[in-house]
Amino acid sequence: MYNSDNIRIVIIEDDKTIRDGYAFLIGQTEGYSVVNAYASFEDAAKKIATDAPDVILLDIELPGTNGVEAIPKLKKIVPRANILILTVYEFEKLIFDALSNGASGYLTKNTPAAKIIDSIKEVQQGGGPMSVSIAKVVINSFRKNQDSPLSKRETQILELIYNGKSRPQIATELFIDLETVRSHIKNIYVKLDVNSRADAIKIARDNKLI
Amino acid sequence: MYNSDNIRIVIIEDDKTIRDGYAFLIGQTEGYSVVNAYASFEDAAKKIATDAPDVILLDIELPGTNGVEAIPKLKKIVPRANILILTVYEFEKLIFDALSNGASGYLTKNTPAAKIIDSIKEVQQGGGPMSVSIAKVVINSFRKNQDSPLSKRETQILELIYNGKSRPQIATELFIDLETVRSHIKNIYVKLDVNSRADAIKIARDNKLI
DNA sequence: GTATTTATCCCCCAAATAGGGGGATTTTGC
DNA sequence: GCAAAATCCCCCTATTTGGGGGATAAATAC
Image (cartoon, each protein chain N blue to C red):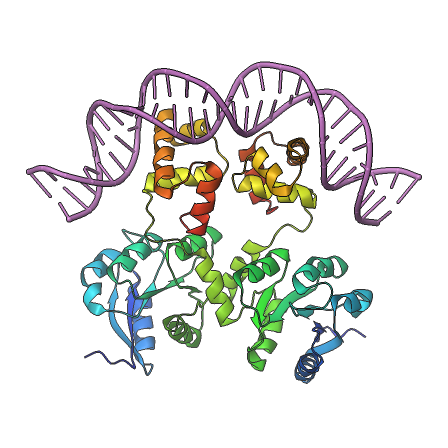
């Protein structure tokens, strides 16, 4: 019954046209079987265990439980399935939420058919396929502000504050006096125009200083 | 002199064989010119301004200034150049450091020639090319632990602690009593077996609970 | 080569915060 | 219906924080 050469795919996508389109496209390809296609997470939840998919193509915008919320729930039902997000949205928060919830890849719907097919195989093999536009967002998210107002030492101390360290802990870690730490923190506060650790962290993150 | 149809490329790579290999490979391709190739950042620094590269292919392991450190320095000299890392290393820390320092893409040296050529164009057009293996590391870095010992509320509070918020601030933000915040934090500390904010943050990050 | 920034250290102070201990009650999920 | 989760209450002290006010040597910048 289960052909090990075949990648078993389940599609969860509310738009019937798109759903059928993907099912047709993928089903036609040698080595790929679409075992089922659902219009919502609720529909899928009932039967997906018996579908035993290798890969789940998941839309973000779904009626009822949205795609991001559906990810951990799907993972609970079929832990070995890799989830590949297929959506029009390119918002940083959505991408990060999907990935942190357990998605293994993220494609936008303008992705060419051949690339979708490739990505299914890639995710099946443990890779992490992304659209070009998504990769760009992800890479940019790492990039730090290159013209930070903070000195190296200040940045270093701000990072320790970010890690929840107290002033005495920072002093010990950097082998400097407690008062030196104080001075640096005061200067950081002046430069960032804040007067608390929480605000400093917020400003620093918003401006990618750390 | 400057052919706008041509992507101007500079290679910084200490291994002569590899360096010449890339230079030949890329130079042969229509629309791509290797304007110069250097064995170290120090060599490159002197002349790269006049090279006016669109894309810099940069090795991580270099004599003298290493690749990661070279990135911000190169960015200062030629701000408009996109830096593409080409290395054998796949360590998470190295990848993140390179990207946060301003690299626009990250390829491993086993990448097929055609993919390297494509990636140069992609980075030139503002994309963020990555090798399959790198994409996997990057995507995995986002993934949260799916079987956290913490409840939703506890995770939420731990995230606020992570943001440097004090107990009163957390209480206000969540519309709950200060004592309730205390209880949650106590429970978090018990579950994570810690007794300070800094330790809680460390354990939480190491285990990807937040 | 002078000026600015940076990194280092010192003192004063009051208020806020954290963490440890001991509970209780209600709501929610399986 | 039971266990976990979320809510709230009291005791306590030591630590931490942030706002003032400085100084000095070294490194960096122009």
